[in-house]
Image (cartoon, rainbow, N blue to C red):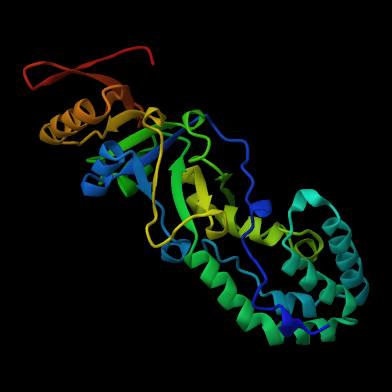
Length: 307
């Protein structure tokens, strides 16, 4: 079987590889102030970014060389993992596209480590183009499990001068799907045998694994792919208004900015609850969420409540 016959059709990110995982009901989006943040409130939508533009060079790029990894396999290891690969392909829950199955059949029909290495070497540049093209057309929107993370406020919410938005994922299942919880590692726990044995594993790990130092983010990400209808040229997706539950202002957010956003919420979604982060000054390095009660005279007061 000639691999050039279908090498331009092999899919990398598929719906089978991107199934929603268990996640908290409430997720949080840290934002600096400005037009794009205001649009989240006024237009009920958010921009999804290509992972190729991320600031982490290892995000969506696992530190593994598949060709060298295959070359280092023993013959019996290769036979074992390819047999498992074909066995797993019979499981319809994997939702493998037909063109990927053709590629898998070529793998199993090719004998010997060096023959497979040679075949991979011939098509790897083209496969990389396919992967990069799919990632360019993929949209990611990132959230955190926490609203009181001091580092997140510093890094993503304008040095505590911005906002953190609370979302209820149960209010819009279509928008908040698929949701992938990020895993943090110092070193990949899997090797090429696992990736060759299990369909979709490499794509899934590419989406969900980040370097350990990012663990403070406690990230959950929405992943939208072009084959499911996502348009990367626009990148703006709308959510149901009830999904946005709270706007939380930072410890350093100016009073004038708070009043501006109070008006935005009042005019576009009056059901949004408003809060501000304060220091409890109890000897601990922590943030406390205090409710904002707007007054009719264009001011507001802070009121502690049992949240």
